[in-house]
Length: 344
View 1 (tube, helix red, strand yellow):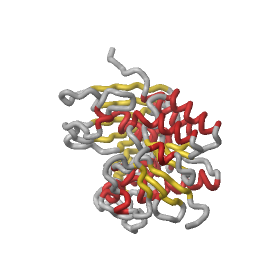
View 2 (tube, rainbow, N blue to C red; view 1 turned 30 degrees about the vertical axis):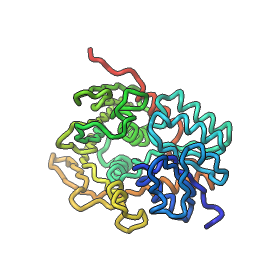
View 3 (cartoon, helix red, strand yellow; view 1 turned 135 degrees about the vertical axis):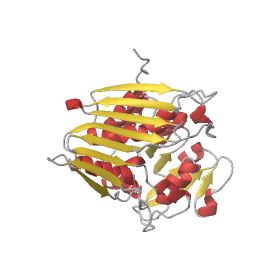
View 4 (tube, one colour; view 1 turned 120 degrees about the vertical axis):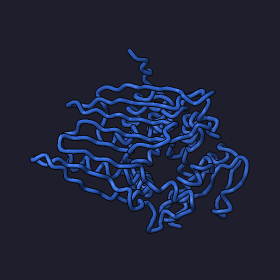
């Protein structure tokens, strides 16, 4: 084990710990997965025999050998556990939503500076294959001046989530706070802070306490408008990204395979990891000066959450700025917590 490996603890070994974190931390090149928290069934050691399984968050935070902690507990505990981890002298990576509001987020960033520890936010969807293709189209100005962008995350789940914290009316619950941070982060990473924003929420599932439909409308200079949609009741999902510009349009279905591959146990080092299946290509439609349409199909770039953890390592060991900036998270939360539009 290299002396430069970042000794890491994961605060929960549920789905996110098992799928989104442990496979990357246990690669033993830049990180050392020392411990996880498992309050009930002890499953981590079946896959990682050398890992300590603590019964509580406090036990893990009291482990002096751990220098970096991943806060992947229920949404309403993020601020509390992130605060405890910073005060225990740990660098932290916190899952979305980072905090229920911008004020709590600002306090965490300030605490990190006060104790000289890094505060990072796990916005892994920046490294999705489908989004990376959208980013390339935007950066290459393929469509000319942009007019509108539609970003969607559609699911169909009439039943309530077994994760109770997602269904209770508490800070950070509902589909807006579940999927909104992913989509907002992608948009903000491309275009920055919008000039204006509007939020629409609705609840359609019988007996639900939280929103299951959300729309955000973001206004940018020169009339460019972004529509962000997240819904739990879409039986036939629409494209994840539809972008229109003065020269043409771009359509792309949501096709990133990383979560499914990790769920199935595929290693992030496998050559097939993050590669979209054939038939999911993005479609660019360009209008020629004579009015004819030119169709171009584009394969997505390789999706790779390894790059997020490479950035975490670079921040801790090389003091290279983490790509998800604190001001971007504050903008995100200010948009999420704004009053809901109730119509005219």
